[in-house]
Amino acid sequence: MKKATYTPAAVRVVCGLILAFTAVRFIYLVVKFHWTVSPGDFLGGYILALIVREGLNFYDPASVATVMKMMHLDPTDPTMIPKMFLTHIPLYHVTKIPFTFFSFPLALLLWRLFLLATLGLTGYLFMRAIHSGWSWEWIGIICLIFLSGRPIPWALKIGNSVFLLLCLLTAVWWAHQRDRPWLTGALLGLSVMFKLVPLILIPLFLIKRHYQTVVATLTTVLGLILLNQLLVGGSATSEWLFSVKVYHDYVLHRPYQINAISLVHKLLGGARPTLAYGVGAGAMFALYAVSLFICSRRGGPLSIGEYATVVALVPICSPYVYPIHLVLLVFPLLATAHILMESERFPGFRWGVFTIVWLAWALGFYYFRWADEASFGLKSLLGYVPLFSAIGLWGLLLSCIGTRPAESIMDKPSPSEITLRS
Image 1 (cartoon, rainbow, N blue to C red):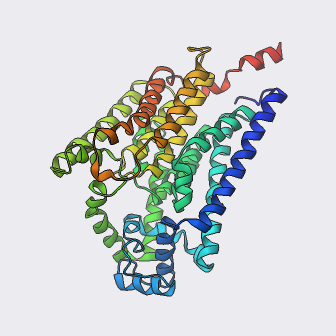
Image 2 (tube, helix red, strand yellow):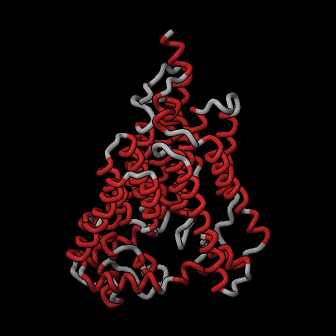
């Protein structure tokens, strides 16, 4: 494992200032959002968790209306009824039950602070998966990614749980690096509570013959299913499956959708949904199949480039994707930075290429059209160009230089280490 290397005092000062600014920035956002912004996702999760706590059925509109009246909310307000949250696994809502013992404003504040802690843990786990000690350079890089990605404050604003999913997927790689297959699988299985799509990582571990990880993942998922049956009952599970089945309106027509199916549907002028499903879903499946094929062609242990490739497909291949879900691209971006910093194929260009990827990540969301998706046209399509350019450039880099096992990269001393030893 690579050791922490000597860092000049000037670099430590700059990276320390970036870290301090990042902490102040996010604490400021928590305070600002708490007083000025509708809570969004957390409100729906809080209502449904309160319903579970009261022993009611959150698929029953009367139960939802009763709890909303208890919270002095208008149950007839379509912006308040948490229909979209019913597509989550029922067990997902149980995770917010501890927060229902507090008043909603206090619960919201605690939840956002918890999300910040989760985001910090994500950066820590990623750095620990690369270095055995602290690295001021990596602290600066991680903070830059956190600061520049517009989906990150947006997810914090509405209290979305995507930070937890990002943390779990990062922890999966951290555990894998430490050769803990059972912990790796357990963490991957837990991520299913937030989205089912992380299950696409199972074939990657199968290809690399990490069978213990696959067994641990499936065992954890089975345990979650049994726990779900005990806590919310079998009827809630069947109703959840029905809700997912009829949820195509969110796939096609929901504002801010950026999944492949919705994109094709809008390019077709909002017509021919069957063709949109076929082309969009076919493109996602083809991308996934090609990624697995490339991974299967390379022998040896699982590399960080291969893992990051499939992690990037988690938001891209989801049936419905909002800009906040692209927070999951943080891991591939950091993996790209790691590969570039350790690669010797492009000496002198690696910082420049990383800067291009980082700027594409940042500018892609500032130029992205957030609203008025109904009038989707050429101008709106141009908003996607920086985003997909960043993803495309990242994929190209991984295909070129992400072919060496992460273990060999990690064990190889850096030039500064060699100089110090000599």
